[in-house]
Length: 485
Image (cartoon, rainbow, N blue to C red; front, side, top):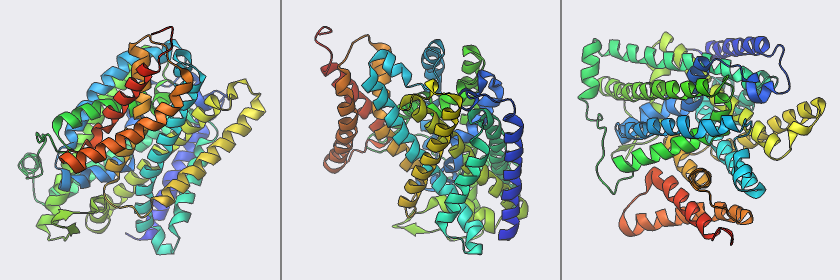
């Protein structure tokens, strides 16, 4: 497929997003950017959140990682589902009862201003890195498929994507994104289904034979009981639960969408429905991964290896889709990865803007003109931050999804500790000590993981978020106020 045709497809897709943005932004108020006027249908929010959570990372990394990590990621997904139940019945009632716009306002109510600012700052760091790494993968694919043919430098590709996202989000923010994410989720899932159909047909398999081929394959290993392994079932399940709570329930990005629902009941319906659809979709992508390796095996396609293990597994799906699967699959892949790149970053930029303007600039007390000016400046500022992080990591290799969850374990760990301590205890703490605790505990967690690996060959894996949160809670207990003691 020619680069010109791909460019036309992307331009057409962007035109649809702009049309949606134009329609939705009519009759928008200053609050629409942040709250969506709290009128979003929960069914639309639930479906749209799939695309934002999965992003280009799931779209590309999960199928590829099957070759090195089997189906072990499914253990993590099981933990996610339990985490979403916790979010539904513990966190959402708190957010709705307090009528929060920035969810980190809870920390001020419970502990004090310094804890509040620290929690918000850790979100800003976490979300900036997460959004940048997700966009990095998608930008690399678009660079390979389109912009290399026009000799466009990679940094221009990234800037262009960020500018396009700014065009359809800066007016109505989350109110627009709730609807554009729905369209983007549709294209993302459609691309996976078309790819599965193409591979199935190429392998001359019917539906039943396809299921048998996947479940009988050597990569179809769901449970890892080796306790020293980073993919051990208990580590994956517990970390899946905790990371879901942290990266969804304590994440302004995901909760901002949920809080646009009309009431608490609809918001809870949204999270429960979203969790089930997401689990099924992730299983679908794992199955696609096995089929991609089956296709490569049958047609003798050589994959890059090092010491007998596949490397750069994120390249597998793009390479086969664009070079081997035909025009329909190629178009669906381009639409899927474009949808994934836009859906993950547009909501992240809106959430970052919301958190910074409410938590640090006190925008709710500004006049309408100042609100608009500050909002646009902050949106531009975080676009620059994400661009910078992308360029710093542009030469990174391996599957991006593992990198994201490892980083999340260190940056979301203190947030998780703060919320668990605040919700399940009534202990008062020294507010001034919290910033130091939240900086030191991730460093201590990293050091402990290094010791465990070098001395005991024991990898914490994604469990670093649990260790980080527990160390944070222990430190908070130590700095309780004298009256409390």
